[in-house]
Length: 166
Image (cartoon, rainbow, N blue to C red; front, side, top):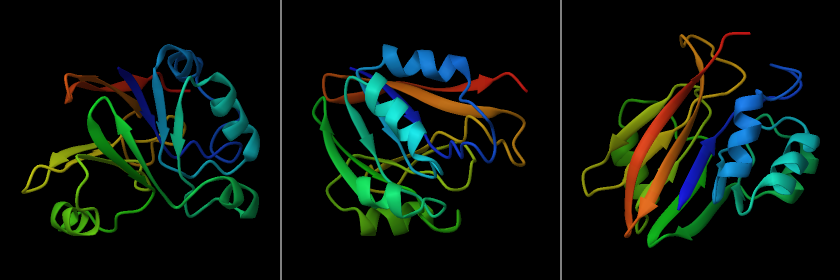
C-alpha cells in the first residue's frame, strides 16, 4: 500500500497552486493523508477528487467551512497498522512521550503545524511523522512531502521528497 503524507498546504496564502509533483503523487498513492492547515476549501476538493482513499484533519489556520468537513483527529487502519492524524502536537521537546500518552493504541501518528520534516519513534514503538510543507518551507532548506509503503503490517520506505524552490 502506497501512502502520500502531506500537511500545511496553506493555499492560497503561501502559494497560489500546489506543486505539480505533489498533485501527481496524489493520484499515484493508494491512500493520501493530509495533516491540516489547508486554508481554502478548493484544495480539499482537489485532494478528495484525486485520492483513491483520503484521510485528513483540519489545522489551526482552517476556518469554519473546513472544520465542518474535517475532524480535528482522524484514525484509519491501513494495511494492518493503526494510523492517527492530527495537526498540532505541541513543542518538539517531549513530543514522543506526550504523543504516546495522548494516542495509545496507534502505530503511526502523522502530524503537521511546524513545517519541519520529522521521523522519530517513541518509547513503546509509536512512529511520529511530519511530512513538512509542500508550499512553505519556513526555516527549512526545502519544501517537502513524504511517501511511505505499508507491507505486511509494517511501515517501510518512508521518504521525504524535496521540492524545487519556487
